[in-house]
Length: 204
Image (cartoon, rainbow, N blue to C red; front, side, top):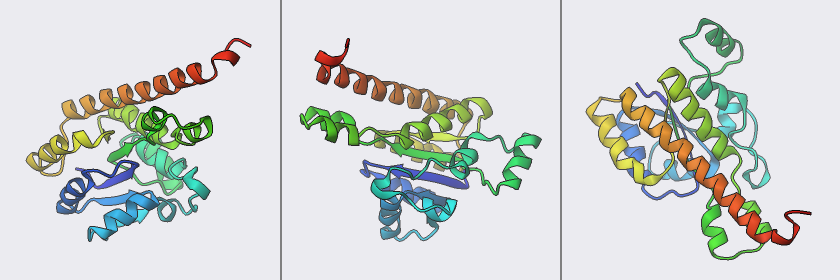
């Protein structure tokens, strides 16, 4: 059963439908500040900002949000492994069952031909780390579901309802594979952009 979800999205399109189904199953939501504000505006009160959950305030410009042991530990550690479980209990780490993250719009920014500073500001750090943590945990422990694009919401919502709040293993693995594909595409876009912009400096 999905009991706790982490949601941190740059593109908030379609989020309302996902939140509605999480409401149906009384899922606790942890969210970055902007995402939390939107979720609360939809009338869902069972949501904590990441800073409330971790006990550490979000940094200026949101540079540090989800990069925290209580977040990554909740995703990566195996609650069924006795050693992992003891570590989680000692460090007050609660398991996270669903990760919904889409990345800063780096590709869109560089298409608009902004300058290097603007492009670099839109290189996501915490997002790819969260996506990869969730995908790894999904494949290792068959536990975490990870969503990386609003286009995945409708199928996820349908499967969650059909399975009464659970996600089948086969679908979790498919989501994990798509998650790694997305982070690979993102890094490739950054590499291609920098090679083009820094062409004259590349081999110096």
